[in-house]
Image (cartoon, rainbow, N blue to C red):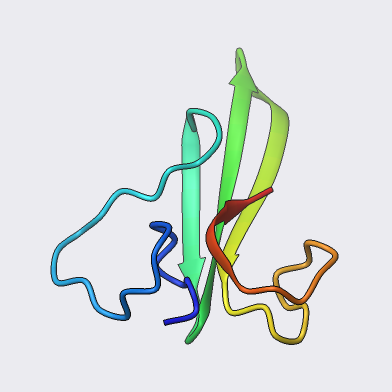
Length: 79
């Protein structure tokens, strides 16, 4: 209900897996979730070395826990 599903709506309940759209394709992705928010880490590789890493967050942000510079809840992934 605070956007923690990351699918763009505040439906509150989803009963099947749903794809979370990130701004670009991820080559390696880790996702972690808490009660009201979630984070995803995208790592792009150049040969064998990590070249670029991005952290996305979404969900409840009442106290700024998403780290995006505001305290507005986010229904979709934010860089």
